[in-house]
Length: 342
Ligand code: TXA
Ligand code: MG
Image 1 (cartoon, rainbow, N blue to C red):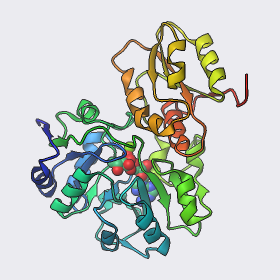
Image 2 (cartoon, protein in one colour; image 1 turned 30 degrees about the horizontal axis):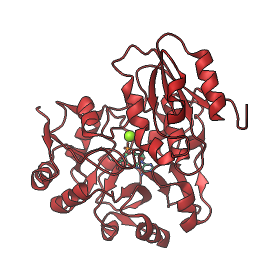
Image 3 (cartoon, helix red, strand yellow; image 1 turned 45 degrees about the horizontal axis):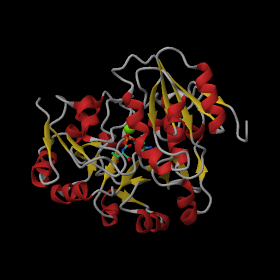
């Protein structure tokens, strides 16, 4: 299969691919997605094949407006409308009870479905033109860092899907925040582009799923099935060095070897001579770090780097999502040096 690269103007061609049961790379504000008609089970199954995705990891349905919620979900709590009103289109996925018309291929047999309205004009236009909800996981091969540019998606998917729509680099850079609204207390299943603090403004108390903060013990099941897999991993092993940035920079300098990659804040980029350095943004700018983190993780592939150290932001705001992606890329291999002047 020859994977076509479409432009932002090719809305009709993109919608036709979806309606014909094809696979389409779509730009969103978070990361690129690998989309198919979410009501076509065969097309949805092909997503799993193209990604090499485990069969028990459900997909998110993308819709162009909150008015579509009723078509695919039932028992929708008022909180869902309040969140949609405030944060859609945007980087928020809500897990709700599903209707019968949502194929098992999307939900992997769960009686819930994740739904989101992405904030990207091109993909919103494609969703409207296709007239169907689009099931889309992130557009990487399973286990790889999520793609934040069309070129990343082409690296992973060339020859495996019909087309990719190039909508430019993603503005947010980490995937959507996932909140489960089917429990009595809303539960954060994955931190993402919408900070937890913003959700709390609307929902009050939110439980944080254990899989967000720590590795699971063997046999333990996270509520978002995808959280149990090693993820976002470059080819070389990653160690996250958490804590005060001066201290972490010093630790990395001391422990670096001959072919070491370093993911660091901009202020420290000059401090690792002999290393391959990826600066992900100023220490105080977590939005910049979110935009760059996956690209940085990808950058060492195809180089001779054999080990990667990463500085890591604290958990406030978007830091929770950036730190989660780095720690998952590291398989939760973390050196924590603590806060405060060294
Ligand atoms: O920003 C995003 O959410 C991107 C863009 C393309 O929209 N999509 C994305 O999809 O990150 P994916 O498949 O890479 O991650 C979806 C996560 C997985 O961890 C999956 O297990 C979880 O959402 N999930 C999906 N449906 C669920 C459900 N019904 N209950 C619990 N978790 C669910
Ligand atoms: Mg993914």
